[in-house]
Length: 85
Image (cartoon, rainbow, N blue to C red; front, side, top):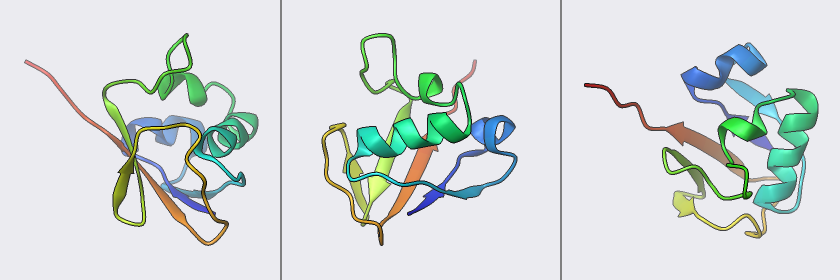
């Protein structure tokens, strides 16, 4: 499936769009980490929970569960919130 990568994660992929495989969000993130080591930790914390500043969208809907089923034809959009002061 096509995965759109946010700018803060381009240092891992070197590009804004990559391909990954998996039947769930967890499996796709594991495949991304296999291809781009360390990337998964930027999206999940030590307890395997989604980090609060990262959002995942498929078919126009936000995904909050790692067990969410995905199709090979889906497009996964990863969004990272930016903050500052």
